[in-house]
Length: 155
Image 1 (cartoon, rainbow, N blue to C red):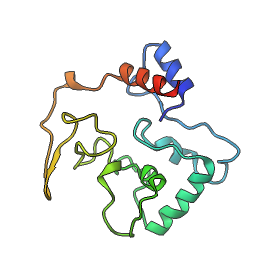
Image 2: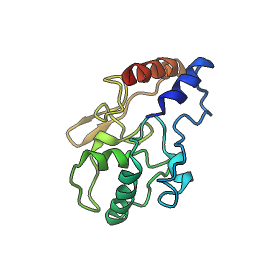
Image 3: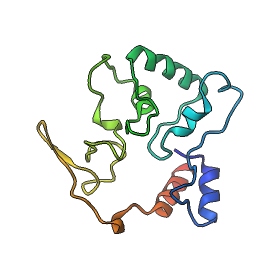
Image 4: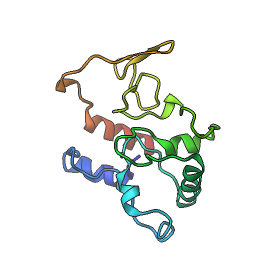
């Protein structure tokens, strides 16, 4: 989730463009040496769970134990930090819960926490995935409405 101050700045200037760095984390002394800044900045802003510096350090250790190779890869489309923070058990090599799939994942469905409802994502029928029909650009999310919603949640 983006910093509410940054969200307000973006809102005041008319909302973010697709090129704004909405979720860029601030460098803090607690993070120095623990996590490369480019790894922090690579995470999608609206669909990545934010962790405290201590949680991030514990998370990085867990990632190594789990053998996760695509952490912060823009093509992974999975919120591993959210899964980690949820406390759900995971056996290395097994499938991760759908709950933390991000938009862009090949099997993004209506089930992840980032889905906006029945019209946002495919659906599962048993073990079969039925993709969402292709949408026209007029159906893209309203970024300004999303920012307003985030600001209201922070108040």
